[in-house]
Image (cartoon, rainbow, N blue to C red; front, side, top):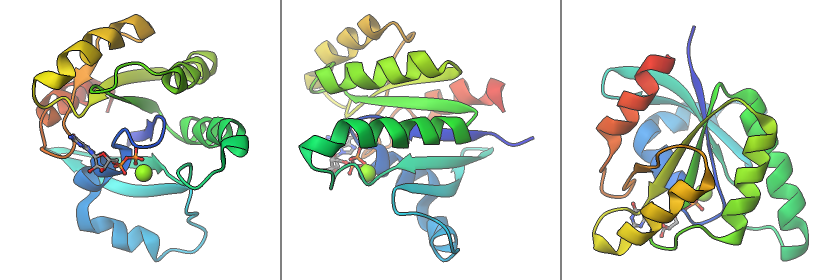
Length: 163
Ligand code: GDP
Ligand code: MG
């Protein structure tokens, strides 16, 4: 059995940066397939010795304010339904925003396995946000820097028992 991980969270927290780090150039193969929508990107992830499928929820960035709530809810629900595990990403430099709370609610309602990651955690500017993340009640946040590749071994450690 292989694991499917959905990367979810509000726009601009670094989901696609993490997706790209996990999938790299192998995404090109997936993009060529028909029926792959712009809103959910799927790729084959490599993380150390782990291999799994990863889904990036994109397309929220272009939504108008009006449609954002409904759209992000539908997209996130779809991604979570397709996945075995949801990786909920927040921005450690911002802390927990109202939009993050909306996502946390969606994930709690959906049930299933949720891992919490506080991205952009490189440097001291992230310390307060990382602490705030505990208040989401989704367990211990994983400090990540998708851009700088920090926390990847810890992410692998969280995923390994689930694969
Ligand atoms: P998405 O909307 O959640 O997919 O976010 P993106 O992956 O498009 O990233 C949004 C912005 O955050 C971009 O400017 C990224 O370069 C930046 N970013 C992503 N990961 C990190 C990180 O680990 N640290 C910092 N400082 N910036 C990051
Ligand atoms: Mg994105």
